[in-house]
Image (cartoon, rainbow, N blue to C red; front, side, top):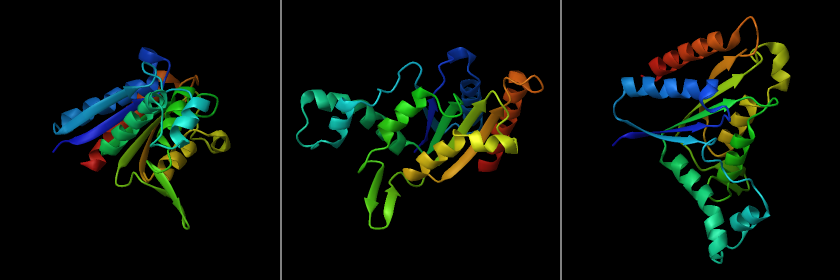
Length: 207
C-alpha cells in the first residue's frame, strides 16, 4: 500500500513563492527516493479555504443530525480537508511568514481542520489530538532571519504551527527554514538553496 503525502501550500505569491518552490523540491526529491509514495497537493492560493463566519460556526457546532442542506454544503470543505489529513502519512505545511505569523490562507485552513470530535476531543485530562501517528514537515520562509535569538520573541509562525499540529495529535514535526529572503547579506537565492540542503538532509534521515 502506498504511503500518502499531503502538501499544503499557503502563499499568495504563486510562482514567485519561495515556500512553494521548496515544497515542490521536497516532492521531487521524495519521488526520486521512493516511488511508492502518492501525493496530494492542496494549494490554498488556488482553492482558498472558506473564511470562518457565523454560518460555518452553526454548521460545525449545530446538531450534526439536523443540519440543513445548506449547512451540510457549508461544512463540506472542512470534512474534505480533515479526510485528507486522516489519509496522509506525511503532511507538509509550506508557510511563508506574513506580519510575523502565517498567511490568512493558512489561518483559514487551520480554522477548518481544528474541529471538536473530528481532530481533537476533551476529557477530564484535557484536550487530546485525534490525528496521531503522522509525520509533519513545516517549511517556513521569512524575509528576516528568524533564526537569530533576538527574533525568536516575534516569531508567531513556527511556534503557532507546532501548537496547532500538537493540538490535533501530530507531534512528530520537523522544520525546514528559508530565512533572510529580504536581507541583503542572505537573499532569496541563498535562503532557497539553504532550505533545499535541509530538505536533502531530512530525506536522508528518514531513509
